[in-house]
Image (cartoon, rainbow, N blue to C red; front, side, top):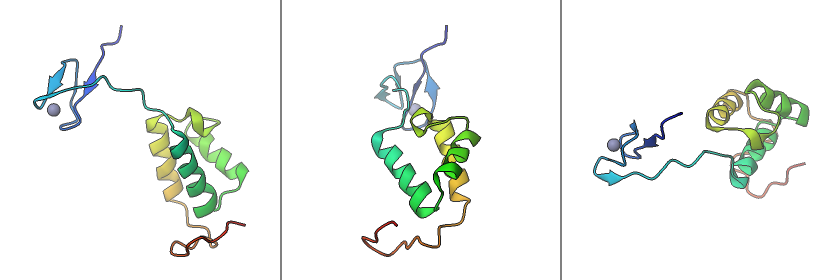
Length: 102
Ligand SMILES: [Zn+2]
C-alpha cells in the first residue's frame, strides 16, 4: 500500500508525519481541474494563442489526455508550458479591454 504522504506548505517536504515546520499538515487533496482552471485554460489556448479546436485537442493529446477535465497537475503544467511556448494570436490584444473574441 502507498503511504499517505502530506506536503508541508512551508518547506515542501513530503512526509508521513502529521506536522512539519511547527504546523499541523492537512492531508493533501487530490489535485484536479476546477471550472475556473478549465475556463482560464480555454481562454489562454483559444483566445490568446488562437488555437482552433483541432489544434487544442492535439495539445491535450501531447500531455496524455483527451479533455482538459482529465488533466492532473503535472499534465496541466506541461500543457501550459507547451502553450506558453506558442506565439500569441495576432488578434490577441493584451491591453485591449472588453474586446470581443470573433
Ligand atoms: Zn516543513
